[in-house]
Image 1: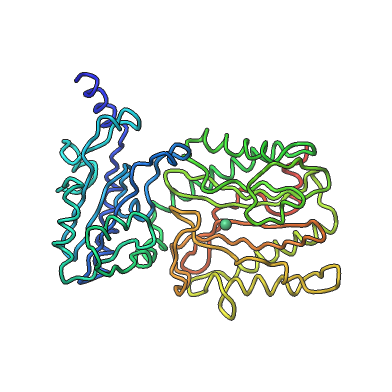
Image 2: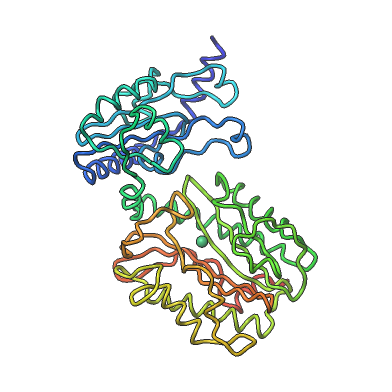
Amino acid sequence: MVRLFLLWAIAASTFAIDPAGLAEHAHRRAALRKALPDAIVALAGDGEPDRGGLRAGFFQESNFFYLTGWREPGAMLILTPDAEYFFLPARNQVRERYTGPKIGPEDAGAAQASGFPNIAGAKAFPEKLRELARGRTVYALTKHPSADKVRQALDGQTLQDAALPIARLRMVKSARELSLIQAATDASIAAHRAAWSRIAAGVHEYQLAAAFLHTMLDRGCERPAYAPIVGAGPNAIILHYSANRRRMDAGELLLIDAGAECSAYAADLTRTLPVNGKFTPRQREIYEIVLGAQKAAIAAARPGMKLTGHGEGTLNQIALDYVNRHGKDRNGEKLGKYYLHQLGHHVGLDVHDPADPDMTLQPGMVVTIEPGLYIPEENIGVRIEDMVLITENGVRVLSTALPREPGAVEKAIRR
Ligand SMILES: [Mn+2]
């Protein structure tokens, strides 16, 4: 009994209650309920990880986290046009010996910690959902495994996908979110610089990944936002290379695409550097074309533009056009065929944050702008990626503290 009491005391002290955060999560739920009048939304958070979870630990499903801020497994949520229902699993003393104390539906303090005045046990979820769903459209995260709990309860009723309505809310960041994204960006910049300090011929890619991970974890970030990409020479051409096994050599380009997740928010940054501290003339020429394409896209970015796709009014087209107007490959042809991926994506709780592809850029959105050129026959892969906030009349680049001009990059790694 004493032992359990101590565990609860620890739980109460480590589950930080943030009133500003709780108010913001409540505000988001209200906005979603308003966006879906006459419908209900039923969401299950991620469950307690079993065997697979040993590697990664527990992290909440990001839509569920966005709406609740809840960081413990097994919780469920139902939103109706005029009410909210929150469900927590009963406490399990055996499991708590493995994964630590949890807050159960009957615990004093559960309402204060969650911001939901009435909390039911998870066992009550199916029956409550059936009762509320009668004669109404039901939204759930239909592509996420947690929707199985909703399907089981509703047996045969067609579900609408809640992903897009929630994505439309997630696309525009609050002031609080922007400060967390800036903090994740700053930690990632420090971690990139730590990796840069180890660049030298003979060093392995994983040693730079180690320096990146050490610095971001040391600063209190939870995990990398994605597997760090450290690719030298031919590996710089592989877009999502993450084996990080190669020994880098003088004369090669090195591409580092790595970002930290801090207080649940992601950052995503890429730089391309010369292993021996000096670009060859051809490497520098391609680098400057990619940088020029990025600057052209950043200069044109403002509300009303589209980030991806083709045609007038899209930043991706502006970057591609720039590439096609500058430089040539070995056969004297335009470089556009080496521009392999879209210009960027939204960033937030997820490194590839969900987005409505039909929506144009609006103030408060955070996106990456990351043109790249990948020329296998020349062993040249260059990508330059920055985090950009869309403002009322343009953009603010959140990652200017990480050098990107070719001379500044060379200077930063020269020893
Ligand atoms: Mn990216």
